[in-house]
Length: 240
Ligand SMILES: Nc1ncnc2c1ncn2[C@@H]1O[C@H](COP(=O)(O)OP(=O)(O)OP(=O)(O)O)[C@@H](O)[C@H]1O
Ligand SMILES: [Mg+2]
Image 1 (cartoon, rainbow, N blue to C red):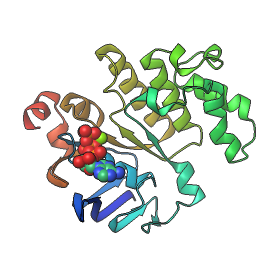
Image 2 (cartoon, rainbow, N blue to C red; image 1 turned 60 degrees about the horizontal axis):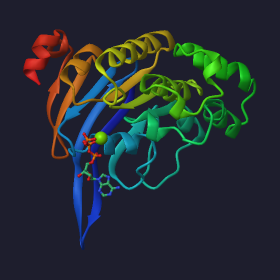
Image 3 (cartoon, rainbow, N blue to C red; image 1 turned 90 degrees about the horizontal axis):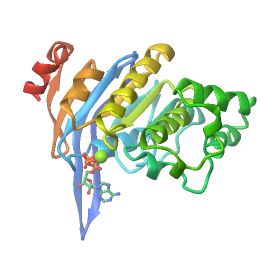
């Protein structure tokens, strides 16, 4: 089953007295269990697509089916979708509240949904991403960049999502930490049977992570990459 089915998605923003189209008739499907990646130059519309799928960008047109639910523009996501679709942002420092301890950051999504067993679930989320329990009482500025992104991933995993939207999850990190986080994401995907939609501007990252990909330019998909295209990193780098 396709977990994401997008047909002719268009997103525009007000621009003076007019509208500027930033996503222009984009169509793609992501099958359950695969990692599908979007690549393309800055400003081509990648994050905007992820924001639509996370329910953060509510003005759009086209047809979208997400985890079997048909979305409508301007509509609030169902409670199921809000749990099952989670996003990890590019900059883990900006995405974590600076004045909240890690414990508070991780407990809030569970408390809002009146989930039970909050304490053991926080500990197991930290465990899943390879962080020790004693960082729970720290604030984001007391962690390294890699540890912060692990916290952001732990937060995304708390509600046992089916789909992770990963918006340049490692571009703020240095090379060795980047590899650790990518391996962690691949491992978690296997273990929990998740599906990933990944945005990256790095051809090596795309080749390492994804089954299929699409190159975007100015709000359009201009080139799809099949499994075969991506099967060898060196080919991909040359191809992209
Ligand atoms: N809320 C908004 N209001 C107006 N314009 C916006 C808004 N969000 C995005 N844009 C514009 O839409 C275009 C696409 O932005 P988007 O963030 O999707 O690009 P991107 O492909 O993710 O780029 P990058 O690789 O730099 O992150 C950009 O020109 C951006 O300025
Ligand atoms: Mg972006």
